[in-house]
Every structure is written in C-alpha cells, then in structure tokens.
Amino acid sequence: MGEHMSTPKKPIKNQGDILLWVAGGAIAAVGVAWLVIMKPWAGSDPGPQARMSAPTVNLAMADTSKPPAAPDAPTTDDAAAGGASLDNPLRMAQLAYDAGMLIEPEEYSAWTLYSRAAKAQPNNADAAAGLTKVADDLVKRGETALEQGRFDDARHIVERIRAALPAHPGAKALAVRIFPVVSPQLPAPESVKPAEQPRVARVELAPAAPAKPAVDPLVQASDQFSAAMGAGRLLTPVDTSAKHYLTVLIATNRDSEITQRARQTLSRELLSRASQSIEALDDEGAAVWINEAESVGADADGVRKARSVLTERQIARESAKPIPASSMKVLTYVAPVFPARALERNLQGWVDLEFTVGTDGRTRDITIANASNDSVFRREATEAIKQWQFEPRVFQNRVIDQRVFTRIRFVQ
Image 1 (tube, rainbow, N blue to C red):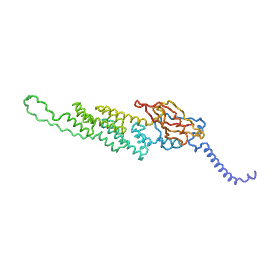
Image 2: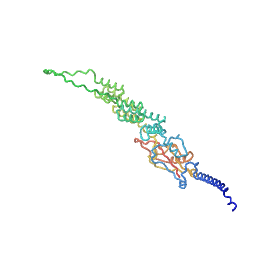
Image 3: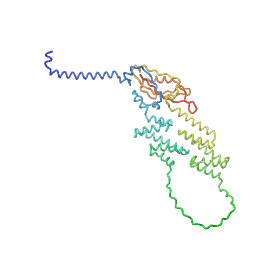
Image 4: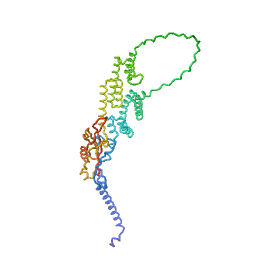
C-alpha cells in the first residue's frame, strides 16, 4: 500500500482513463434502459402511467364534424400521422364535390376545402384546378338564378367567385349581365321658350270613331311570346319575358288555340330546365323551374314526375353523405373487445369506420376508412359495429338509408 501511494503521478493518468470508461458505460446503460422501458418498436405507447391503468375502449361518437378519410388513404402506426391524413383538404374537397356540396354546408363544402388547400399551398395545381371546377359549376347556378329573377343569389355567387378567382371568365361574364355598364347621362338641353302663338277660336268637333287596330292583339302577343322564347327570356326581364306574354294571351283569349299552344311550349321548356338543374345538382334552381311550370298551367303529371325525380335525387345524395354517428339515436350498443395481443404489447390506437344505417336501423356495408395500426383493433371494431342498431333517419318525411361515420378509440 505504501509503495502504491509513493508514485502518484503515473496512476493519475490511468485513473482518468478509467473514469472515461465508467462514464461511457453509464451513458450506454441509460440508453439501453430507455429502450427497454419505452419500446419504440411496439408502436405508440401511453407510457408507464397508462400501462398501470386498466384497458378501456373509447368510442369517438361525439360530433367530430368531419367524415373520416377515404378508404384508400394510407395507414400508419403513428396515430398523429393518421389523424393528419383525415384532415387532407384536397381529398375531403373531392368527396364534397362528388356529393354536390359545392358551397353548403359552408364549413365543409368543396369551395371551402379547396380554398383552404389553395391558401395553404398557393402553387398547388390540384387545389387551383378544384377551385376553378367548383367555380364553373357555381357560374351555371348563377346563370339559372339570373334567368329565374333571383338576382341576389346570382350576385352572391359572382362575389364569392371573384373574391378568390378575380380573373375567372365565367364570373366576369355573369357580372356583366348582373351589373350592366350604365352609359353616362348627357345633360338635358336648356328648354327654349316657344314663341307665343296668336289665340284662335276653339271649334268643337264630333268625336271620331276609334280606329280599328291594324294588328290582332292575340297575334301580336303570340309574336312577342315567340320572340321571347327564341331569345331565352323565359322569366326575365319580367315585362318582356315569355311568361309575361303568355299572361297577355290568357287575358286576351284563354281558350284560344294560340294561347294553349303557347302554354304547352313554355311548360315543356320550364320542365326541361328543371331536369337540367337536377342533373347539375342545383336543387334550388330545379324547384323554381318546377314551381313556375305549375304556375303557368303545365300538365299535372309532368309536374308531379319532375318533383318525384327531384325528391329521389335529393334523398340519394343525402343518404350517401356521411354524417357523424353521434347525430343518430343509438338503440342497441355493444362495446368493442380490447384485443389481447394489444394488451400484451401495451398498444393503443383508433379505427375510423363508415357504415350504412338501413331503414330497419341495422348496420351494413361496414368499411374501414383509416386506422392507427395495420394489424390490430380493426376486426374488433368491425365486429362491434355489426351488432349496433340505430333509430332510422327521416328525411323529407321518408325513412331513408344513411351513411354514417365514427371513430373508435382503444385506450389502456
């Protein structure tokens, strides 16, 4: 011991080397301990606190307000990444466009979602193309509104488009029709006081017989009606529209063959415009055309058929539009089973599903839109939803099938 302590300088160097090795070993030990505790290879882990708690299943049936991502959206083990894919504005915008949700509901319409994507990524060609596509359809609705005399609706459409797409040609053309250029008014010439004429005696003459009209008023109104039809002025301008001249014909001679022929012509055209609006998913425009056809005395069967087609299309679109499960009344609920393999690996996650609630309230056509894990939770979530039962949805006084979405969370 005395000999060892008698040579202090050389052991100091050896002692420093030993301390460095000890420090490196300690760091390595901490890293290994972290890996053993956190297990990052096992997916998202709630941490030691969560592992100590009992496993539970949380159903996200509160109003999530957004439908889940499409079935072909990429899945990931990272719940945060999966949530991001659900909020893909372009994908959601296309789904809204396909469902005819151009501007309504405002928050989740195709116009709003494409606008968000374009604002977030100004150089995104898909966002710009989608916004232009929606604008083109809105211009058609604006033209229909203008023809029907709904000037405020047409103006609002133009203002909406030009706020985002100032150079959109269709909106510009529609704006010219709504806001025509007013020519400057020339000042009126100063009135010249006429020279006073000499007064003469007034001679009373016998009243002359009224002149016989050169043109038959029925024929004249018929010609004006035909001109308005040829120019496409079905309802506007009000004083020179085909509907106005049909009113003149009816007032002149309701039972005339000319009047009846004009009534049939206008009725067919109005119902044809209704069909075009139905195909363009413009329910409001279609309803106006049908009501106008009925007001001019269109065939009752034709009006009834047009209304039936409009109602069926509205129901089909409403049925296909996913709504949150929380907006439906649940009659029978079965909780999903937490999978044992997930408990063993300390896993938790979520599954987004879409399904149809039939007119009998039972679920069918269950699909997985997205999930936080590729191999667990999916089967258990699907099996649970198969056993759920809801109160069927009523739309336009009819019980309908309804597409529904929900998120089921598996939490330990």
